[in-house]
Amino acid sequence: MCLNSRLIVAIDTADAGRARALIDSVTPYCGIIKIGLELFSALGPAAFAVAGSHKVFLDLKFHDIPNTVAGAIRSVLPRRPAMLTVHAAGGGKMIAAARRSVETAGGERPILLAVTVLTSLSSDDLAATGVADSASRHVLRLAHLALESGADGLVCSPRELSMLRAEFGAGPTLVVPGIRPKGAIQGDQIRVAFPADAVRAGADYLVVGRPITEAADIGAAAAAIAKEIADEIR
Image (tube, rainbow, N blue to C red; front, side, top):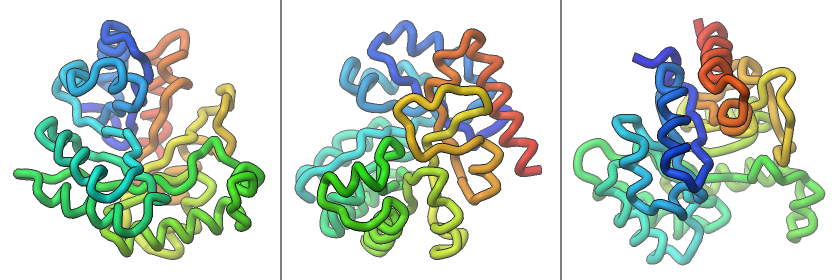
């Protein structure tokens, strides 16, 4: 039994051996392993074998025409991911098609999550793409679109958690990257928060990558974050 099932560790590497070593180090402290673009692009579906018996959060952020996204999701369903992502910006028809696909899974289906605004983007970055609203207002717009189109939950930055819980209540599953423990380097993440603050604001799951996987003691870093989460939800 892991110390905290609400911690998701992002295994962002192209090397299968390093991925296995990272997973071995964090196994006692996390409930779900995130397979993202880097590992999946290197290994393809074999990345699931690297995860072993762990539940997998497949974070490929599907974003294409509805038929293509539906087909891509059907292709990964035999691997039995616990969660998977689409981009909310793909639109309501795409998200609805994704929902129809996950419903075809035999047994327990994956949680369908819609990515709102990447944690690396600021309001200025969005303005450069033609989005006039602030990041938080754009997140809220995309959240309404995604949930009304069939998404089970959202991927959002810690900054939008309180707003989304106030708007939608306890229903949607909220998965939150951009988690940085005290003293960690912020890197390319802009809209970030400490683990305990994210849990307090309403996060269901916290995704942590580099602050754990690039730490001098990977297990200790994972244990510290898991403890901070556990202390907050007691």
